[in-house]
Length: 82
Image (tube, rainbow, N blue to C red; front, side, top):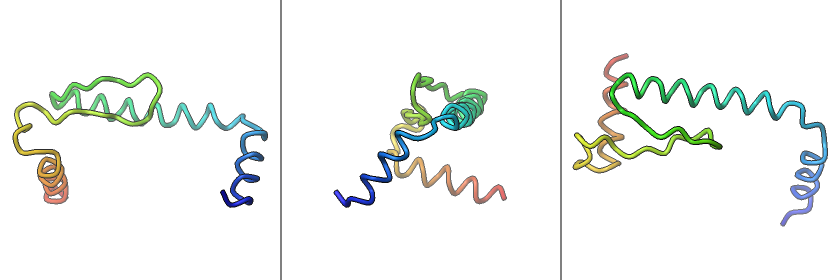
């Protein structure tokens, strides 16, 4: 691995970590807001215990179209509502 990257990583990990908890809380809040929004729309998802990412299955009522087509439909609907 490129030495400057290794040195930078070591400095970051050995340095002040006080900002880490603050950033973690920000991402947790963002994730929880998204989960609440999806739940209010009827799309319940598992709340991950240690991740800012939401890994969700396509809702059963549209599962037959596949993930790519589901994304396109949701994305286009969002753009159309602007």
